[in-house]
Image (cartoon, rainbow, N blue to C red; front, side):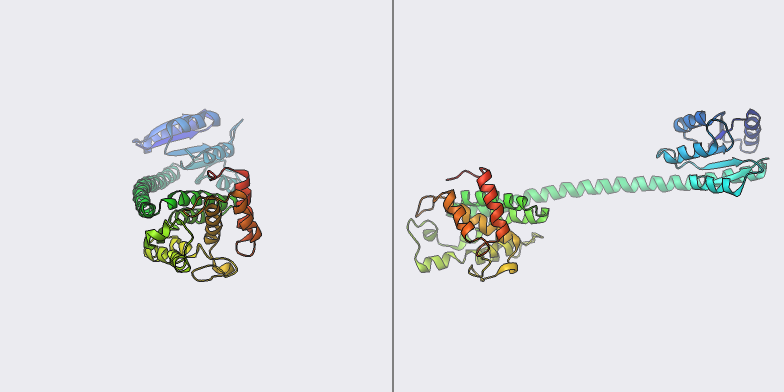
Length: 348
């Protein structure tokens, strides 16, 4: 049963229109309001299907009522037929359309035209309601699918973290030093990235790569990793292969981030003196430049099988003295600021 609200300050007009509608649309529910203010209250309460709105009313005219209705998200979809005086101008119609009115009918009201206008408005309202319902259903389905994907993503991330932790555990089992080193490099590298205000994906790349940067040591003999004295040249050359080994392990894993390449580059230096490929400057990823600095600083500050910690001052002097030579200047500045200003990890 369609609901029709008639708003007019003239009681005689309300009675006339009400009688016509009851006669020609007997299956409709008709309600009336004697003022714009009362009409708006009924619209918000009852949400009629069509509004017949007289323009010329005291206190709040039809234009103002129309403006209020079309500004309210909950009721703006209700079609409005403005009732104009016989002498109304084209400007009145233009103003009405601008405010969101859907149709017009002039006084004296022609019954046939009135019913035709209402039926058209009802058809439009029905179509719009169907579209709105379909939109709501679609939005619900999208929300449902999004939530499903989010849960699936969360499960994948748990699995992903498990795989990474397994890989790290394998390295740690062969080289206990690596455990604390990787954790500290991760903290410092991520802190540097945040200090440089790098975008989220770069920070994520650094987070993952720093945890895995020594994964290639799986292929380095244990006696080299845990040797209590200085390495021979041959042993050191073998150790220097771990970035390549790490790259080979990671290159076929679809991280959707350049993790394997960052691991491959983490011992490169901007002057080309690094290894394994002697890359220079912009050929080195920013993630690898950050990882390189964090790795060096943490290594100098850490106890090694063949020496005690050299301390924070030696570590910072190394990167400051080689700022812009071996290490990216901005990365060095950020690292110094962090290490000097925060206990980013326990200094050994």
